[in-house]
Structure formats: structure tokens, C-alpha cells
Length: 554
Image: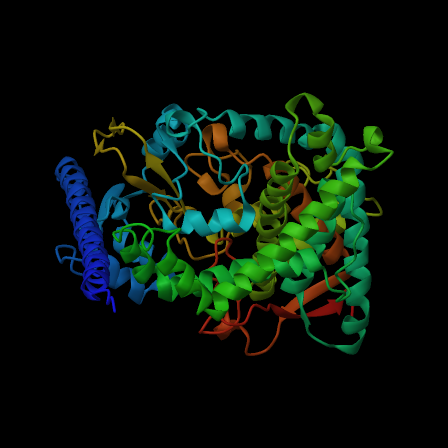
């Protein structure tokens, strides 16, 4: 009888195990080498950047020389960053913040000097652009939320297309902000929606009840923007749910709720090799699956995608498309550009945050300021009584020359509570500021309208509300009052936002005066969100502004 020896089979199995172990060993060595190389090259970049910035004074944060740099102070003050930036940089035109020695994106300069801000926002704007997803963790998630659009497109030498996509979207969008459109379409929509808002306040005013006016302002701006930008007539001010608006807010808050505690872990993943590391690796995917906040974020994004697709499809199929003047129609009508549905959906999302959130924040803080300063409210009502008698507010009748006190109130609110309290650009090449400060490539240049607006050297008694500062009105240079940015990326909708806020303020104050709910003042905080709305809790987990409207003369 012939027996086959089992030895060859055993040898073959052992060989496969040996090969597999060798492969694993090689992968591990390659992974370690990858991580080591990445850390070393990052360290070299940071060392170069630190050397160039050696003569720039440190901002006054805790332990600037420790290994983690500003991280301790930053994390400690995460829910009050605006106040913290004032504390560490007041009186410094340009100061530096240095973080982890292996993280080039943690090399910051805080810029309060208007000449330097003018330099990187205007004169040398081509050298400074929005950070990429590789440079800033927040950008990756921001782009997951609103996609590729005017808020996230890069420009200048930092953009792969040298800024063509950004320039095209801005050029087409500019057509909706014409003076003719203000006086016809926009004015009519704002007036109609404001009348609806006035009618909704009649009942609580007669009953002496408080209302969450911030919720109403966010609903008002959402209803207005849906009509002006997308030709959708919706009414969410009465409490009806707006799927789009609810999903937008949920995505915003869930994104931040996920990132705040997770950022250190996610940053460490940058150094792990593929397929585990990076912001698209398996480790982050698994981490996200275990986070309820991240799952809420993804669900909200899915809803936004579906709703944006619905808007785009409806516009493309509209038989009256040629007569439409809304923003989405302008892009669809630009047939020579051949925009994809994805491009148009992302454009929709970018303009929602631009046209809805910022104006709603401005209105909310305006009525907070008026409620906290009854003498200011009384003077504004007196001006309205004198100059807005029996007429519908127009662009001309709401101008700074026609309504100087109203204009002064809004500029005081923008000074104290800018809708976007801070922003940044990244240097894409070595450069030098007008004051001689050398800026290395990769440096994040951060400016804060919130800090600049509370600078006593520029505004005596900066915490006081004084609309008279702006009378007679001389429009501040954008780089000295960078609430709306400056240079080529200056806000397209600044005139629309001011007109909208003035119109609503006049129409409400013609009918009502407003008092803050008793005991509420001590709870008011600035929200730690990308656009600075109002929170009414110390933990920033409640977003209401409770006021009591009172019929004028009662």
C-alpha cells in the first residue's frame, strides 16, 4: 500500500504562514517608517515657520513654550473663544500662537492691524486663501456639510484651478444683488414676510406672553431666502417645520458637537498610514460609527442632499424658467457653463448659510441690544415715528442719510456682535506684511471682527452701546471693520443683509416695543458656532432669545 507523506503539506502551510507574517512585518515596518517620515517632515516645516516668526510677539496664552503650545488655553476656553482671543491679544497688532511642534496648521498669527488685514485680504489676496481639508480638520467636515461652493472654494495661487470655480460662482451670483432687484423682488419678499412676522406677534403681545424672537428671525430669513434664492414660497414662522432649515441646523450643531471632543484624536490619525490613518481612513470611519453626533450629522447631510436635489430638479423642469429671477434660476440659465446637479446642490447650501444665518444673527443681537438698552430703543422708535409715517420702507427711505439712528444701531450691533466673529486665511507662499512681519508659507492668518470691535483704542468705552458713533455716517474701510471681509472676497450680500435687517426692525418697532424676559439677561451668551447666534444657557445648550412684545401705546 502506498502512503503519501504529510510533510510536504505541513511544509507548504508553514511557508504560507511565514510569508504572511513576513508581509505583516513589512507592512508594520513600512507603517512605522511612513509615520516617522511624516512626523519628521512636519517637524521640519514647523521649525522653519517658527524661525521666520521668531521676532513676532507671542499672544498672552498659558505656557506658550510647552510642547502643546496654545492647546491647553484653547481647549479650556473652547466655549468662550471670542473673549479669550481678546484677553490674549488685546493691544497687539500682530501676535503669534504656536501649537504642537509637529503640526504646521497650528502655527497662527492673530492680526488686528488694519493695514496687515488689508494686505492679506486685498493687496496680496492671491497669496492667501481658504485652508484646504488637508490643512484644517474643520474644512473637511464643513465641505461634507455644504459641499464645494463660494464659501469653500479656494482662490489665487493656492487653488488648483487658480480660482476659476470661485470667480464663476461669484460672478453669476452677483447678478441677483442688483439695485433693480432690491427695489422689486427682494423688497416685496422682505415686506411680505415681515408683515407675516408682525401678525404672529399680535396675539402674544395682547396676552402679555414672551416669544422666542431668535427662532422667529431664523424662520423669517429662511422663508425669505427660499423665495429669493430658490423661488420656494414657504412659511415656517408659525412653527411649521421646514425640512431644509431643520436639517441645516442639525448638521451645524451635530458637526461641532462631534468635533469638539474628537479633534485631538482625529488629528493624531493624520500620522497613521493608509488604510487606517488620515481623514478618510478606516480609524476615522469606525470612530464616526460609534458617535451619535456624527451619525446625526450624516443623517442631516442626507436630508440636505435630498432637499437640494429636489430644488434643482424642480428648477430645471420649470416651464417658466426663462422668466424666473431667483439665484438658482440664474445658475441654471447659464447654460454655457453646463453646471452639474451636484454643483448646483452645493451652491444652494453655500448660499443658505450666507443669506439666512448671518442676517438672523444680526436681527437677534439687534433686538437683544434694544431690549437691554431702553433709551436706545426709545430714540430709534422716535426716529421711526418721524420718518416712516404711513409708508412701506424702501431702499432709499432706509438709507443711512434718511435713518441715521437706525443705521447707527445696526453698526453698533455689528461692531459688538459680528455674525462671523473670526475668520482666517492661509499663506500659500512666504510673504511680508506692511509692518515688516515675515509670514512663512502655511501660516494661518486669523482676524477677529469681535476683538477689533471691542478695542478701546478704536472705540472709546467699547462695551457701551452708542449709535451716535456712526452719525454722521462715513462707511468704515472694510479692513478697519472687517465684518464683511474685504478685497475680492468681500461679502456679496452686505447691502441685502442691511436692507433686510433695517426693514424688519422698522416694521416691528412701528407696532411693538420689546423687553427682555425677566431674569434672562444673566443667561445670554454668544453661541460657539460658526455664525454667532444667541444662547441663553451657561452650557450653550439652549438657543433662545425670550422677549416680551408690547403693543405701542399700551
